[in-house]
Image (tube, rainbow, N blue to C red):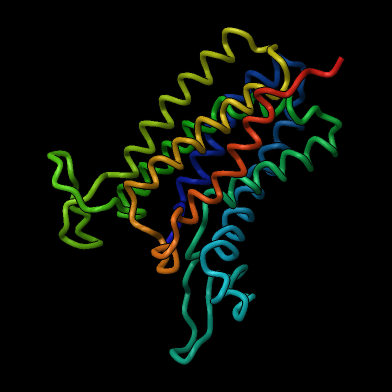
Length: 249
C-alpha cells in the first residue's frame, strides 16, 4: 500500500520551520506569515497525500466508501474498526503542497515562484526522512535481489530485497546538496528555475528508482510504467518548462 507514515508531516514541517524561521526574518517577512504558511503546508500535505492515495491507487474501493477517505475508522460486517488513515501517496502530497502554496500566495500577495524556489531547498531532506521512516516500518519494500546489501524485511516476508527506500533517501540527500549549492551560489537567479531543476531531479530520480520497488497495487502489474512513474511525468515536464522558459521582458 503506498503510504507515507507520520515522519511525512512531522519531518517536512520540522525541516521547513528550521529553514524558514531565520530566512523569513532576513527577507523582512513576519512571524505571523510564517505561522500561516506552516499551517497551509501541513494541511496541504495531509489532504493531498490522502486524496492522492484514494484517487490514484484505490479509487475502486473509496468511490463506494467516501466517508473512509476522511475518517480514521470504518464500520463493516465485523463492526467498528479504528483504521487510521491507511494510505497516503507522496505525489498527492506534492500536489497538495503546491496547491497550498498557491492559496497562501494569493491570500498574502506573495510571489509564488519566489516562495517555491526557497521551499525546494529543504524538501529533499524531508523526503529523505520520509523514506527512512518507510524503511524502518518495512513499507514500500524493494524487489528481490541477491546483492550483498540486500535486506530481509521480516514484517513482509523472508526474501532478500533491494532497500529501495534507502536508495531514494540517498538520492534525495544528493539532490538537497545540489539544490542547496545552487541556491547559495545565486539565490536571485531567474524565478522558477531552481524550482524547475528540483522537479526534474527529484521526480526523475523517482522514475528510475521505482524499478527497484515492488508494485504497490495489483493493477500495476500489467502496466508498462507503474503509477508512481506515470505520476512523476507531469512533474518532470513542469520542471523542464521552468528551466527553459524565457524570462519576461
